[in-house]
Length: 107
Image (cartoon, rainbow, N blue to C red; front, side, top):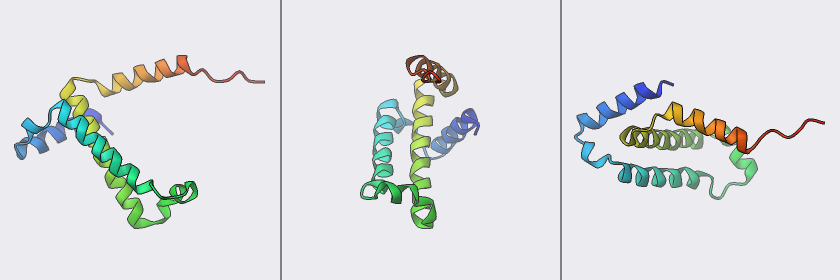
């Protein structure tokens, strides 16, 4: 997935609907949290085994995909409106995590 192309597409989608004034970092962070809660709600009362098997239930799996997409789109827009280069931020965070959590020594 080309994140920059997705950001451009989402900017155009918002512009066509005159939504730019609503898409500020505060509102986007709040919307992201709401969508993440909706994602969490899908799994709320499932056992770990049921959650792992969600792909076998087409309606639930489709709903999961829609909520994951909502979370991703709000996150991409939040990064865009905040001047965050997502690719660079992810690369930096992966390096920091690798230093913080090195693999265990092999026996």
